[in-house]
Every structure is written in structure tokens, then in C-alpha cells.
Image 1 (cartoon, rainbow, N blue to C red):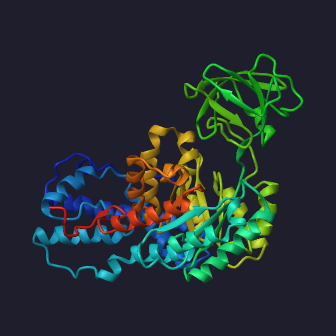
Image 2: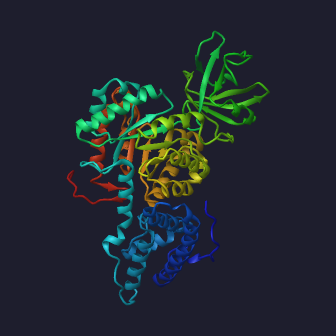
Length: 504
């Protein structure tokens, strides 16, 4: 992340209330400092901006980062009673919003009126975000602003009616998860999506989700040889290089993971999470051939541990390559068949650069977009740089992958970080995908909870919402279209829209 330029402290801007004249002087000083710091950041980013169309967005992102290094709460409290913008919606237009507030405040204090900023210039950021969203996801649907992405399972390879129904009901992007199946399944899925898009007369893009350096349970074995084990709090598990050739010792079961080299990096006291956090464990003992863990978190009735479940080791530096051999193989097949390439478990700019180099080597058209899946604390910390490296070369979106991210950073921090990422991406003019467990009970079981409907409604603040696969996924798409269409009459991003009320 960019280093903070050292500016003089401004006590008057962090302790309120502030007298209007003092506020005006402070805002002008703040604007000058934001402009200077943004220019320094932009100079460092300039070599990365190979897409001329993204330069203006990068400048706004640099300005937003500079602005948000100051505590603005006292400024906001002083501006509101004056009837002026409190800068609470400045993400997409940092400098125009600052200029507008300064111009209005100066007029209130009797300074000669200046020509106000035109509507088109003021809302330029929103236009750039819409353009980037269309570059990634295609034309905006007629009935709503927010797109819908659906993860397709292997049934979509043989059930063309299902795919047609999904497109007809409102699926705007079909997601293929490369963590499951292979090209023999993906190819007919792609064919069915393309055919359904033509038949339904609705555009539907295809996103191929590379597995990335994802840890998964590769094998499980208990004393009877079962590959599914019910795990309870207090049980011991042994993580080994090969679960099929090592005895259990005093552990309930042995398991191996998709990247055995991680064993050498685990240390006593490191947390290990399995199956999206349903099983939590602490490393108790490390030896040359195994790592013994004690389960510290599981439901009272236990959790089934089985092959294929994800693993997270948030305090362990994995040391894995950003792209695996499988990723490169999958990419060679999918790159010319998909419209979007999603990059799982991105951590730093080296990973983004590696993906972009692969895409360039395959001579893919510049219109092929990338999605950065934010699933780790490193990715959150590096997000501004990740966006600029990616969006500077190709259309780009960011997925807030709430499942793994919650495990990696802690559930209590998830809501806060989700909020901050929504703001940052709006400042960068890149679309955000709201993902993981949206209407999950409805999609899987046919019924939903009140909390899930509230979550789906709040997803209108993003630019795309992802549904997972399930028996009732068509009903899920229909319901989500209805919820999103209703909510956009009340809210766009963080802005409340004062539509006439009909309930009273």
C-alpha cells in the first residue's frame, strides 16, 4: 500500500464543532493535501495504467485513499446543520465533491459565487463505474441495476432446460467453479449457456473460477477405513502427507491436504479451519511425518469431515505459487471459452501479474475480464494495489468472498471489512460481487430465513450478487430479481432514494 505523506496535523479538523470560517480554511488545506498525495500515488501507478480508460478512475481511487487518512467525523458534524454535503457519498467523485462543498461553504460566508460544477462532471464517477460494470458483465438488464451470477453444477451439462430457465429468469453471468469437475463437464455447460442466451434473447456471460492455491482435504481415513468421519470438539486429527499410508496413532482420523508442503510451515498453536469454519482446530504437536490438531470448535452433534472440503490456515504463510499447474491447464482450456477469469485466493500484486502474464501469453483479447476474489487478510490489505494492477490492463471486478474471508479474518470483522471494500471499489469505479450464502436455504432447501432476505436486500449495494448451486436455484434467481428490483427504488449504493412512500 502507498506510504502516507507526512502533512502537518490539523487539530481543528478532528475535534468539533468547527466554526464555519475555520472549517472552510481547513477544507481548502485538506483539498490541497489530498491533491498532492493523490498525485504522488498516481505517479507510482502510472506505468501500470495500460488502459487509458482507467486513468481517471485510478486518479479518483488515489484521491479517496488520501482523503480517508483523515478522520472526517467532526467535518461531517459541522457541515450537516449548514445544509451541505457531509462527504458521506463522495466515493465515486472525491475531488468534485470536495470542490462542491468548498464552493457552497464559501458562498454561505459571503465570498463571491463561483460557477458550480456541472451535473455531467459531478456524476462522471458513476458513469465510469457503469461502464466498467458493463465491460465485465455485459449490458445492464432492463428490470434492475444489479447483475445476478449463478454457480452451475455438473447437472447444467446435461440439463439444458435448467440453464434456459436460469437465463430466462434473470441469470446474467454463469459461474464455472474449476475446483469441481473438468473440461468434459465444463464444455457442455458452456454450450448450454450460449444456446440459452440466444434462445432466451438475454445476454449471459460466463465466468471461469480458477481454483488458485486453495487448500482442500485430499483424503480422510479413520480406523475402519471410512472416508467420512464425524468430528466433535476435543477430537484429535492428524494431518499427514498421505492419508492412505500412515497409521492413525492416537488420532480419531488422519487427513491429507491438496498441498502437502504446508505441513512443514505449521507451528504449534496455529489455528486450522476446515469446511468453511465448521470445524476449528489448534495445532498441538508437530513432528517429521505428521501434525496433530485438537478440534476446538464443532457443532454439538458433530460435523462430517470428508474429502474435498476447504481448509484455511490464516496465521500460516503458505509459500504456494500464485498459479498452480492445474490453474494453467484449466486456463488453457477455458480462456477462449469464458468471458471472465476469476482468480481465487489472490494475495499480492505478484499473483495478479502472474495471471495477467498467462492471459497475455494466450493472446486473449483485452476485453476478457478478471475478477479478484478477496478471501484473505493479505488481499484486503493489498486491495488498492491489486485493483490498479488488474484494472490498469483489463476490465476488472472484485468479489467479496465472504465464506473464506470470514474464516481468515474472523467473523466479527467481516461486516466492517465488507463495508470498507464496497467503499473502496466504488472509489476505484470497479464493480463488486456480493457472494457466499445469499438465499442459501432457499436455493438448497426451498425455504428461506428472514435474515437471508435482509442480506439479499442489502446486496443491492453491490453491482452483482452470486447464488450458489442448489435444487431450488431457479426459484432463488426469481426471488432475488424481485428483491433487487424492489430495493433499487429505495437505494443505490449508499444513497437513500426518497421515493414516495405508499405504506402510510
